[in-house]
Amino acid sequence: MNTAAAANALEVRGLAVHYGHVQAVRGIDFTLAQGSITALVGANGAGKSTTLQALSGLQPKAAGRVVFEGEDITRLPSHKIVARGIIQVPEGRAILATMTIRENLELGAYRLGGHGRPQDFDYVFHLFPRLRERMHGLAGNLSGGEQQMLAIGRALMAQPRLLLLDEPSMGLAPLVVREIFHALRTIHADGLTLLLVEQNVRQALRLAQYGYVLENGSMALSDTGQNLLQHPRVIQAYLGA
Ligand code: ATP
Image (cartoon, rainbow, N blue to C red; front, side, top):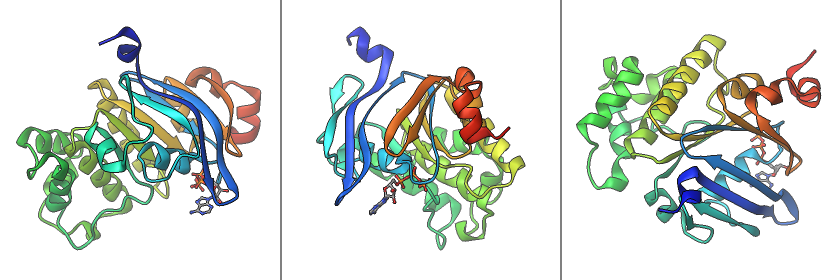
């Protein structure tokens, strides 16, 4: 393994994504250090979800290059990107409401050709004890916060190397957001690389070592989470007085 691959999990150069004539992402560069939490923040419609969709291979890239752990994955189809261990936790969670919590978790392990390793179930249930208690209940009966836990748990069952999280705090009460972010901290401490897309700028930059601010499809700012929290433009545009 070369040193660049060891230092950076993901390198993105000149990524552009268009929807017809709408230029949603306009040639952005960013890097995720191996084992880090990186936040991608910005307002509604800035292009955050589109960026994640392009990384997952769910949206075609109009331009740019994506290198994951030293391998050029720019043109790989989504199932091959998933096979490399890049797993997305989608906005809105996309859990299967008429299946049990356990079945939803089993689906996460589908790409590995089984029903999930016992140690992975243990890990998810250790992170989110409420999912263990309700393992045989229908996922549709879970609260919004519990559904977010299940969506993260399902992604972990796939043994990810990089987790892409799209707005995990969306629609959740502050206490539940704290619980989710605490779990993300634990997952990071256990060695996983995380890219966190958030409109909740304050929380995201507190959690992340490094952050990028996306505005109208372009990268406006990048710095450590700490520095961005004190940046006048971030304070004015995203944090309030
Ligand atoms: P949000 O938090 O609201 O999801 P975002 O930063 O994730 O915002 P995107 O959803 O990536 O932003 O949207 C970026 C731009 O692309 C916006 O102008 C949006 O209207 C446009 N867009 C998103 N999806 C589509 C689509 N399927 N077809 C056409 N335009 C789209």
